[in-house]
Every structure is written in C-alpha cells, then in structure tokens.
Amino acid sequence: MSAASPSLPQLRAFAAAARYGSFSAAARSLGVSQSALSHAIGQLEKSLAARLFLRTSRACKLTPTGETLLPRVQSALADIDGLAALARRSATEVELKLLVIPSFASYFLIDRLPVWQSRHAGIAFTFARHFLEYEDIVTEVDAAILWGDGSWPNAESVLLGGNELVVVAAPRHPAIKAFARGRVDRSQLLDHVEVPEAWRQVAAEAQIAFTGTEHALSFNLYSQVLEAAERGLGVAALPRFVAARALERGTLVTVIERRVRLPGGYYLVHKPEVRYSAALRSFRDWLLGQARAGL
Image (cartoon, rainbow, N blue to C red; front, side, top):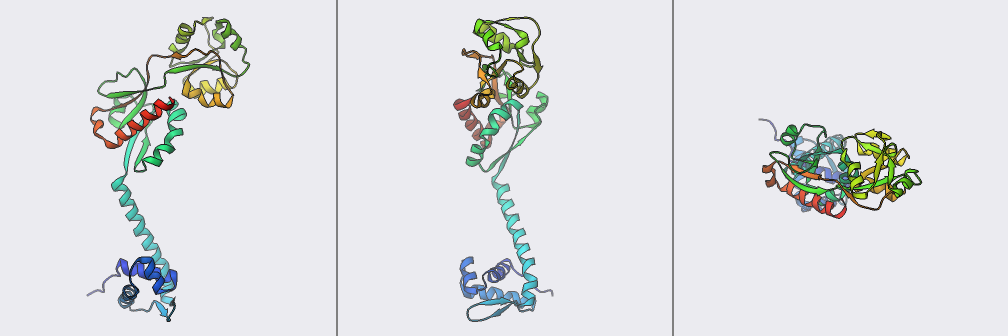
C-alpha cells in the first residue's frame, strides 16, 4: 500500500514555517494554532520519513532535506493558487466581443475604457475586425458600433450620436479667409470618400458656395483626414469628437462657427436576443452616459 501524499495544509504549514523561521509566527500568518501547525509539519515529516526542521525553543531552521524540498513546494503552491485565481475569474468574468469602427474606437472609446475597467472589472472586451460584412457582424459578435441610420435588419440599435461636424484647418490656413467670404474652391478641401454628403451639408447649412471640381486630397479614414488637416494640406469637415484633441492642442482651429449635422449617427447595434445579457446592458448604459456627456 503506497504512502499518502502530503496534504495542502501540511505543505502550506511547511512553507510558512520556512518563511518565518518560527512556528508561532507561521501559525499566526495562517490563522491556525501553533499546535495545529506543529502537528501538520509532524505529519508531513512522518509521511516523507525525513526531518525538515531543526527546532529550538524560539526558532526553527531547515534541514538539508527541507532546503531541497522548499523551492519545489513553493512552486507547487504558486501553481495551485494561480489555478484557483483563474477558476474564480472564469466563474465571474464575462467577455463581450465587439466590433467598433476605427474612428469611434480611436477618438472616443479607447480614451474612456480605463473608466469602464475601474467600474466593471469582471467584464472584458475582445475587438473583432472592423471590416466584417454585416451578415457576419450579427453572427460573430455580441454588439457593434456602426455609422448609419439605425435601420439594420434583424438587429436592435440605439443611437449614440457623433453626427455633429466641425470645419477645421491649421491656424492661418489661406482657406480660412475664403470661408469667411462664403466662397471656397474645392481644391482647398479634404474629402472623406465614404462620407460624400459632408461638404454638401456644410454648403447647405452654413451657406457656403463651393466652386471647382477637385478636392485637395481624398481619404477613407478620418485619422488620415485629421492628420492632413493638421499638416496644412487642406480644410476638413470632421465629427466634433474626432477633432476635439487637435482643437485643444491648437493644431487645428474652427473655420466656421455654425454647427453642421449629418443625417445618421453612430449606433450600438446588437442581435435582439442579446438584450437579455446583463454584461451588454451594463456596457450599453455606460456607453450611453459617456455619449451624452461628450459625443
């Protein structure tokens, strides 16, 4: 019949006594009586058929066998504690898989994620590729933040906002005077190819006449439009939240004061059945609060 393996309390008692060099201090650290700790170590020595400590009235010192055993016991206890922590996290953490279009992620969401994490440590995010087809979005992610009019099929959506445009340029850009006169050549404008209605909306709401046919430069990401504007390559029509940091830094200035709003906006979109997810409800409520405060 094989000898019984050492128990976890015996190993913890051994490691604590080795750490403190005192049975009484080790017992206090573990919240047990000194006699209980001494008994556990005695049982461990009996099962191993080896002395682990040299005892005096006030202290204990590891024997050569104890010194050999200690690092392995410490490593084993660390592994056990790590597995226990992982199991606790697995039982309490929830992972939400999100798709977020780059402009919203870069200029709004990422700045605010530390606030979210401080309040919802048990809910983690995984971000999916932003260029999935819509049919894949509704099957592969829990929710998405998209630009549109809110009419996605087989999905529920809640408007976040973000459709207010600001017309901006580098300080002292020559086109600023042209905007003040109300007549601007399109060669001064930076274009976002996926938002063709932006300059039409500026013309209609701010009563600006655009002449000519060619834009200065065309891009398909707001980050590129923003950088081109900061470098003085033209005037940009950007969502206010995209331009906010550059306006604070002074690398961009507003060209017209009138507010311009695009039809549509940024929406949180999810499958109807996901409404029952407590994690998603928490994220939705938090995100709506953040959007009301600064989008």
